[in-house]
Length: 225
Image (tube, rainbow, N blue to C red; front, side, top):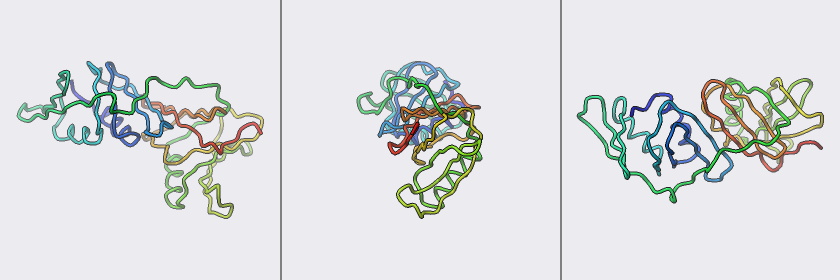
């Protein structure tokens, strides 16, 4: 079985969410942060023939990059990764499931009160502002026909703030302040359909790649007050 560049990109992104992963039979791969506040699911180009665990995903990705067009052959306890020439190969051993942080199923999203499109350029601007200003959170509030996304320090009313407006698809009639930790926005580059529920959970669905993230909101969020 060969690993495509698209799958490699997703694995690299998932390694930023959690250092380990449990692959299951089929083409769906899932990961969950150690804090269990970020969960992601992707459907990739390959069908994995069996379940297997990888304890250090970044190391595994590095091993895959040691050969051109890695070809995987599985046994019960390991995978052999070969190159196209047949001259080099690596035997990589699996880790038991109990040593891994693994999501058991996708999140069943509750009813969402706020929906909007977040394009890749806007997402990059928010992350850049957070890095420049040294802030950790983005606040989503209603404006005049738009949603305002603000990078700020909620504990310091005089802190410098970056804000950018985006059109909304749906929003509640009441006021709200939805807060997401910037460090949890470890998303593969692209454009996203975003849905947010008053149950303090958000869904980021990539419009171009078959990957979805569920990210918990901060407890300081308010909606419907």
